[in-house]
Amino acid sequence: MKRFFQSLQAKYMTIILVALFLFQAAYLLIAMLAMGLQEDISGEKSKNESDPNHIEEKWHADAKKLERASQEAILSHFSKWKKKYPDASMFWVDEHGNLMEQLDVKGDLPANWTPAFTAKFIKERYGGDPFTVISFIGGDEKNGFIVLEIPRNLFLPPIVEVTEKYGLLLGAGLLLIITLFIIVSFLFFRGIRKRLLHLQEAMERRDMDNLPIGIDVQKNDEIGQLEQTFNKMILELKESKQREQEEEQLRRELIANLSHDLRTPLTKINAQTYSIAKEKLSSEGKQAVKALETSIVNIDRLIENLMSYTLLMASKHKQELTELDAVRFVRESMASWYPVFEKESFEVIIELEPFQEKWQADPVWLSRIFDNILQNVLRHAKDGLYLEVATESTDEYDEIIFIDHGKGLKNSSNEKGAGIGLSIVDMMVKGMKLEWDIDSGDEGTSIKILRKH
Image (cartoon, rainbow, N blue to C red; front, side, top):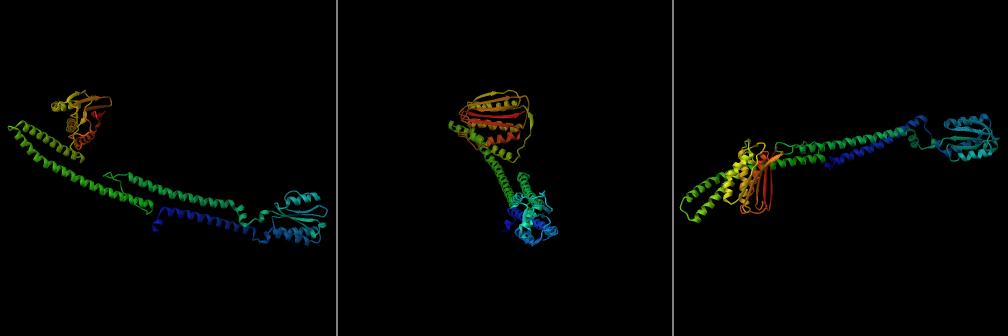
């Protein structure tokens, strides 16, 4: 229950309930105030004095009491009613149809009233506005008649009268309440939007480890709970990152130690193999020694790749960028590798065109890239017995291309490894701000290393 009262839903429901309460309270307050003002101006009226039936009965009774239709009696009668009903109008028509007296009558009345006009007047006034009462003087039609007219709005209920008279004030008060409700709602949702944007910005910020930065939790509503969850997620990410770094450090140390420990017995095996090769051996013995030497070279290369991969992952592999002639570098590298491919009966095609600009590269890294690519061709593309090394230069880039006719990288090979060699190529190429592309299929593999101008 405590969490509900701290929620955004509860807060907005409170705003709505307060607005409804103020709306009703303002309506009643303004109505009561207006009614109070009305009573102060016009004075308190009894229920009977505002009842049309009572007024009609009273007018008939007073008219019947008039024994003679003298001008003084009629004017006295009009004056008494005028005090009670200031907005009323009255007039007197004698027994001959002559208009004798009138008081606050709106509009023109005929000086002589014919029976036809009198009937028409009664028909028009019946049930209309103003409220009209016609009475014979002394209760006898031979004495003429007197007429009372009162506006019907005086008979309206107080609340209707107040609404008509003070409607503008009431509307302004209600409009003020609605405006306040809109403003408070706007501020409420703007605060929510501001906090959400602040949380979004916190998610986009990163620290030294490229992890999000925590956010200060100020409230315990839904957004506050989301912020707490976000901070908890950051702690979990940091713990995971720390464990990953510790595991990575252990892996590097393990690989370094294994590489060092493997090189010592490998050196001894290589020395013993050399000694055995100098002895008089049969053809089968010589072939076994040759296979052993090849395995020693492959193991040494694998150890070197593991060391390089570990150093590259730790960003500790030394790099020295210099200006060099990339085409000449390729030519020198192929000169050292040509006898190896010739011995394996490869058809080697070399087409090197000079580049317009020199490359910024590390000679050791670039040599390692070429060695890994050529080793890959030698081990996995023996079925094709084809190697082409070419260069291409345009206004946009210079590139070095290696093409073989093997079965492709997707097909299995007897010497297929874990792909560390190509992973080293990828990291070294990107480390020197170069680009590379590999296209491999059943008809061969093409590897391009390029430098954009």
